[in-house]
Image 1 (cartoon, each protein chain N blue to C red):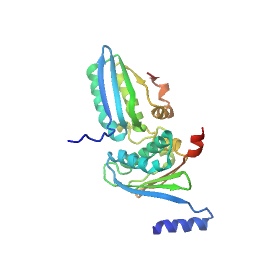
Image 2 (cartoon, each protein chain N blue to C red):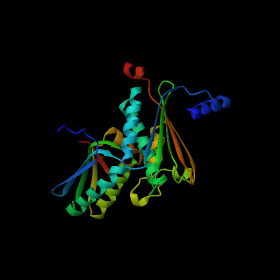
Image 3 (tube, rainbow over the protein chains, first blue to last red):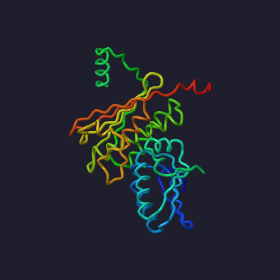
Image 4 (cartoon, helix red, strand yellow):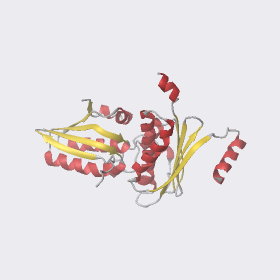
Length: 112
Length: 167
């Protein structure tokens, strides 16, 4: 059995730590993957109902404007349950897209 | 090939200098969303021959991803169609990418290109696709005919690799 060639499939892994949920995003976030992972994130948020959520973007290798829709949609989703969402460590390229849409004016963006 | 020659002759007649085509790839992909990544991957491999910076390559991949996604989400919507992609390397370091569909077309291009404009609010589209293409490439042109399709052409000239290495 040979090892498989790694693809950049997007993943969202959510871990609840006290009142804070860490949502770690990895891989390529485009329209194709955003459809799938937004359901996974919403399910974790509505089940865990955290006070704070941190979306760790450090593992995101590619993101286009579908990622913007994903993030802004999750901000709205978090607000519904009284949760504050923060973005953590987007790459310079991801930051370029976030800046284009002025996301930094809507939510806090931190670096590790 | 015939089309290319015709286009070159037309340009000569119009007074514009003929383009110095160095290399070219043509791709036809079905409008399945998984092909957004396939289009980016092919673009990345083809452009790599110019030794682009990481940022240049990421910008081009992002612009291609936006244009291909538009074909899937808007042009063909719930139908299936073919996305036609042509990537050309012109002169020394200019990349011209043409992404064409035979989908529903755009009624009002000016409105469609406005930041945050989207006709797909339920799908959580940000409406930033054309803005990304415009910002990440040097030139963007959109030609569309309702009921017949849309052609997006994007051009970017990469920095000179010799200048980059001398810094």
